Image 1 (tube, one colour):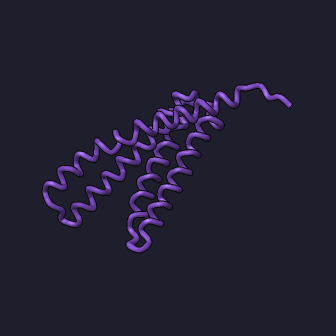
Image 2: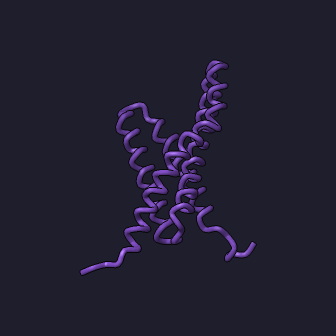
Length: 139
């Protein structure tokens, strides 16, 4: 595969998916000031999400539909990474057997629960960005 045929969005989406999972897992480790760490995780994730939409729109010039699919893919990948982390954590703690079954379901459900709102929010935001950048400017 040559450099010109690669999809530039794939690398960014995978990196952001890994970032979402990393932030979700590592920001949950501290046992002090838990609310502050959770808020920090939300802020970091929101900044990454917004930057991803901006990258898709301004740098790649993708349509709102393509941008929303790419952003939602990254979010779903991050949710899958969180579910993997939760399963590993459960094994380390010797969680009850019923709990492990639920966490196995999380491998499919968490990405599904996050991909839908991430897609529609990114679609709306991308559409608004494309609409505002296509208007003629008046002085």
